[in-house]
Each structure stands twice: as C-alpha cells, then as structure tokens.
Amino acid sequence: QTCALPICTREVKDGMDIALCCLEKQSRKVTFSGANRPCWVIDENMDFHELKGQKQHIGLQQHMMAFESVTLEVQSGWVILTSDGMADQFGGPQGKKWMTKTLKQNVSAMARQPGHLQKMNLEWAFQQWKGNAEQVDDVCVLGVKI
Image 1 (tube, rainbow, N blue to C red):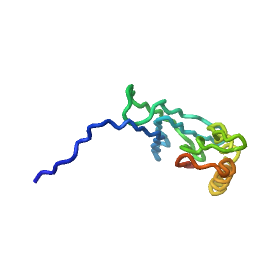
Image 2 (cartoon, rainbow, N blue to C red):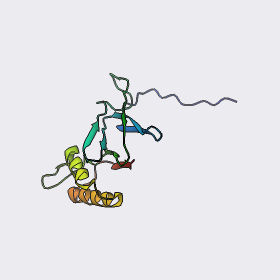
Image 3 (cartoon, rainbow, N blue to C red):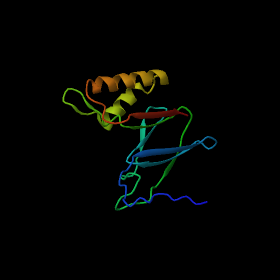
Image 4 (cartoon, helix red, strand yellow):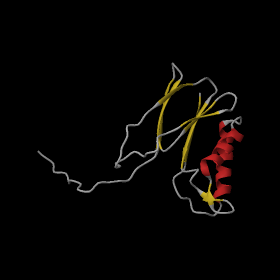
C-alpha cells in the first residue's frame, strides 16, 4: 500500500540559533559548534574562555557554510555554559537589551557559588532587569560542571 504525502512547494527560510557541545568523559574533551551562539568555559581561576559560534543560523539560507567545530580539553571543576534568549531581553531603566556582556558579568560574579544559588541569583537578576516588560523569547541557560 502506498501513502501520498503533500509536497511543500514553498521554501521555509526560518532559522534557529544553537550551541552544540559534546563532552567525552574519558578524555575530558569538549567539542563545540555554534550557530550564532557562543559557549563559555570557566576555569578554576574563574577566567572565561569563549568558544565562538559561526555567524549563521541553522536552516535554509542563501549563502550556507559548513559549520566548524572546536575541541578543548577541560579540567575537573571547570564549567561549560551557554545561553540563548537571556541576553536579548529588553528591560532596565531605558528599556534596552540585557546584552551578552551583562550576562557574562552576572555569571562571573556568581561563579564561585553552588549551582542552586547561581540559578536562583541569575533568575532574580534577569527578572529585575525584565521588570514588567514582556518576555521577548524563550530563555535557556545550560551549565555543566566537570
């Protein structure tokens, strides 16, 4: 028996930003590839190492490039962190974006706290910034301590 599926005759040009990390437990290597998203690695001295994503989204686009990946060896106690949506939120006294710089400052200030306090304090800082403004996007923060 055959099944006829409708054929889509239009191109979908929506895209999505993504940060993809693969952690190899044995070798403690992190491989990262990003579409308009960075990944931060925070070492034992609380220094940020930014792994930059490529300036393109995933999905159909006129000039598509192959995504590259970068591999970094990490040590015990290091943190791998990425976020989407948080830096794009409007708020504050002038109704401006929170920005990646502000997110990094908040994460840096909280880096030595236990994970549950980092989560609570980052949520609080985000809500204070957002205030009564409408949330503009989904917000995701992912952190993994090695």
